[in-house]
Image (tube, rainbow, N blue to C red; front, side, top):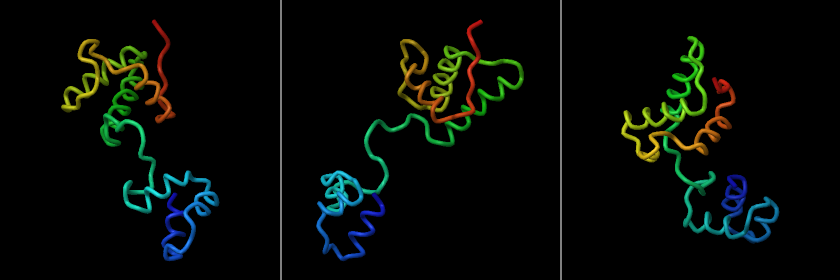
Length: 123
């Protein structure tokens, strides 16, 4: 996306948006919206905003790893519960108050983002 926008502005806007979109394999409407300023930036913009910022998420992962290193490996249910507690202590809404745990989907995404996070098997 950044390359396509750079090329557009380098040529002073004297290039077809359709041809530029094809060359960079970007949907034409997406490129058009970025050029017109309806969507700002060049990064991926769809989907939900993350509940935790990067630093907070790193702190949570470090806590989980520290517990595992000290002989307290956590299973999925325990990590979800700790994530909920962590969010409540940091004033971050978004998890279920009824279940008092982070969602299963959230945990599966955390595992994808954090390659070194290993869960213990059921006891």
